[in-house]
Length: 301
Length: 250
Image 1 (cartoon, rainbow over the protein chains, first blue to last red):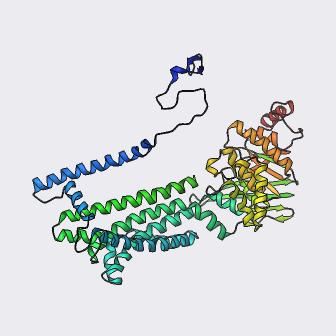
Image 2 (cartoon, chains in turn brown, orange; image 1 turned 120 degrees about the vertical axis):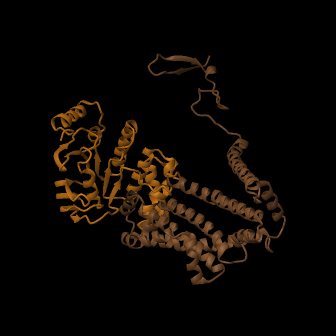
Image 3 (cartoon, rainbow over the protein chains, first blue to last red; image 1 turned 90 degrees about the horizontal axis):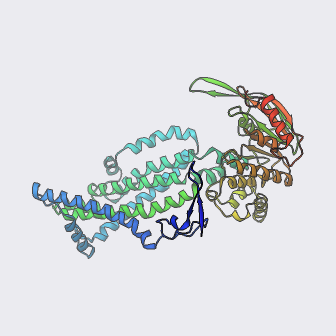
């Protein structure tokens, strides 16, 4: 008979037959081995996280449903229900026009503006962050300005944008870049300043000069912090994009659709736009950033 | 040859407006290829002393000379192995070891050859493509040793390199370090708070006291290697250092 020794704390050694030690875990039945292969079924691997997403979506939709019912019956307003909104979304996806354009055109216009604005913020923000991170003096003198910029609410940029660029696309892009810029700068330079002393000393000991240390030691060790900055910048930019489109007068885009729907009392269309905005935001966050962060975190820990 | 002459150092706490003398009047000479251990309680300034020899910090008074030339900053001839893991986590072992060689402007194929040689020497050949996070603590320190040795330094400065390892691993690493030292002769200054470790490794032990940091005892260890922890001479020396010299009471 196969026997295994189990030692209780303080108690005398007990001998337990292996057959009694079967665990609930699948595939583990033989405790004689030191290591064993354990495979989770592929369906479970995908289904588990998907299940959580579905549950959280369901909660949102249920709350939405009750709020809509309350709006319709108590307040007597045409509050769109989840079903109506999804139905309208599907008909728009099939080509129903929204203020003369398809939903895809609105989405594309918004995404393009955001891409351009965010790209400007990424390039200028990272360069500025590296510049400020390179010296303590610069950090101390210029960083307060960046903190002030960060404190300006997205919509407060509107008068400034209108004065500089007038109505239209450029103003929107400027606002996106302006709100995404500060968190990118702060996180980039902060990450550089926080590079562990021991890495810098090791590099100096190996004879590396200032430029090499900056580019090959401090910059990689700041990667996670930079990604965090991009992430905050992305969310800021996305939020202000919609707000800007509502006000700056661009004639196309998801924010424009929301404000048009509000004027024409087509609340369903407004809800569809909000739904699309949330889905896109979630997708960018979950696909691009989560993956990127995981990859970099793996490298850095 | 390394000469530390009348070195003192104080730290100033600007916020509290107070200064503290970390090291006072340190004198020390280390011959070529000598293995010197510095022991002392935490906070006695032994790491500070090592960092000043390495060139990371500057002494307030006195001079530190390597082969007659003053130490002005860190450089590859003074190789340092740090207490914590100092490998770059975004590079694999091979790239980490090659980093210093690349910085020195050594030809690419030569870099590869030198790096491989030292990775082999510390016994990490099958891990050369592993990232630091895939290595155990002991392996990380061995990789760090390989990286430092690859620079072919004149001196190896080791700052409690195995202090965070468990006891068994530490003993194994000590033995491996001695083997490496035999194959690749270097001057070694090894800082530790572990008396046994110092006795097993060193040609000479310097005992430091804290507040202020001073070297107050020097012990030549004449026990032939390999040394055994429970051999009479080792036990005797341990007793002497602990009881008569009072390493732990100053």
